[in-house]
Length: 110
Length: 114
Image (tube, rainbow over all chains, first blue to last red; front, top):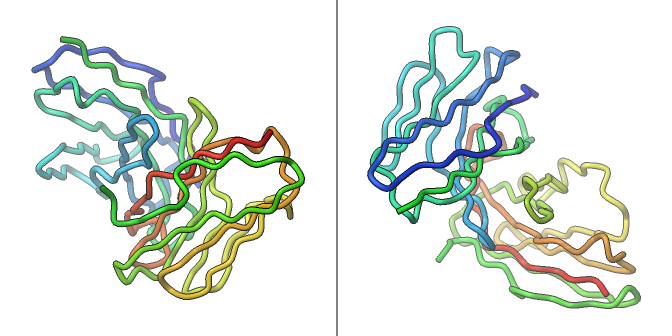
């Protein structure tokens, strides 16, 4: 399983774009990159998933460079309600284990 | 609201008690998971069920006993727990076994062992 490294915490202001980068140097060919968001006292919620290049949905964008050794979750125009922990996961699409890394605590200020 | 329902939301139990946590999903998912989460830590995988069969046990102590009666239900039986077992216990499901299928989590059971 590929190990991931993320910043422990980040601060931002409402209306700004936030980019959270995850490092995964030993990512394998079959591995996908998945991001989850977790609010206090709730279960994690799936945000976005990708394999290479760029993926966008109604919530976020995921940028993956050609070497796939890192990925960046981009949250456009954050609001106070985006204050949460964001987890980057890397794993084999055919595997069973979904292992969470330490996560990034994002705090959005008014 | 989530599509994975966990009961109870809160549970306080003594070290000699026996209790069970319940999880239910009606999305037709065939993989179900138990995670344990301590405060300010990431969720830790405990068990994985695939098509109602136990596929992964992450070296969890025997005082935790999972059960999957059918494709919609997942239980976690608790017996002789220790105070350090106090945590948020999260259930999740996915469409098919495998990391590539996104997990859908419930909001957990907050367990306190006294």
